Amino acid sequence: MATIAALKNHQGWMYPVLTRKKLTSVLDTLNEVGMAARTKAEIDELGAHLADNKIVLRYSFGKQIALGVGVFVLTYFGAVLFDSSLVFIVGTGAAIAIVLDAIRLRARVGILCGQLVERSVQLDYGLVPVEPEPIRARAAKLEEIDKDSSVRRIWHTMQARYQGTDVGFSYITCHFERADIAKNTSQPSQQMALSADIQFFPFRIRPKLRAKKKDSIVPRSGILAEFPYASGLRISSTGRSSLYPKEYEPASYDFRRLFSCNGNNDAGLARFLNPATVDAILRASRAVEGLVVEVSKDNLLYLSTSSGNVTDIELPDYGNERLDPAKTSEALQRLLQMERPMQRLDALLKLAHELVKYHDSNFVVNEDISSSVSA
Image (cartoon, rainbow, N blue to C red):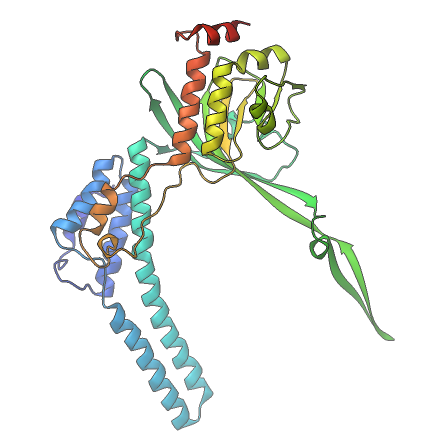
């Protein structure tokens, strides 16, 4: 496994501008070391190493652009001199390749630094990648998986341990994507597709319209956790459930307006939706869009949102010279030290924390909540 020692094998990093070959090698090593890191301290050490050794992640970008322009100019005059379109085509292709290579390598610096920042935040949360297929099998009884469409994938599966002041549990982040085939009736231009039958003798073209179907990609991202305190229910801001037959309406008007509540039986829903739980779900819905709270028949809690991947963070703004690793050697260290919370994940973890606290009989709660749970 690559370590920080691999970086120290690169000689000549003290020069302010690296050669293209040297920069490529450095970026490869940074990527290998960063992706192999198992603690945040290992990632932080990368930024410290660049800063301590005054390593700037750039090379003679302007010179390579100038080289590409020079090749094009020579190609143009060569083509005029020899009156050869082949010389012009080949030379222009070479000039474009030189310029695009310079742009690609410059962009790779930003992409790599973004990946290192993301990896640093994941390690700060304790997130460790896990294989998606076992997660998919465990979640098979959730409505999100149990729908009619068979085209699905699951990715961004990472496992971690959440430890609050009084509640701790293991959870898994995941991102589902479902493709539903449906007739599109929203816009006439999309509803029908134009095609034609061509007859050659006698020659005629017969236009015809046919119904057009589209693939509707439905992304959902969230967390999974064991929840032995309830089962077989779904609280959804995206519509009624097709898996759980019973409907329930809590007393809260705001809650009824935003959520559909379905379950295997009314009593289970009433016990779950005590006043504290209703309030917690309402607060969480203000932080994440398209909130769904589901507990499968085999006690798997799924909290999800439609607003994006729960592990997304706000990536660096490289327009700030102090945060651009191609302009200053301390930039990566600053980027790694900046606090970048996963806001959607924090909101869902807070909700999961409250759900466990309000339904685990080991916790002492106030009289109103206790009476609601025992009702």
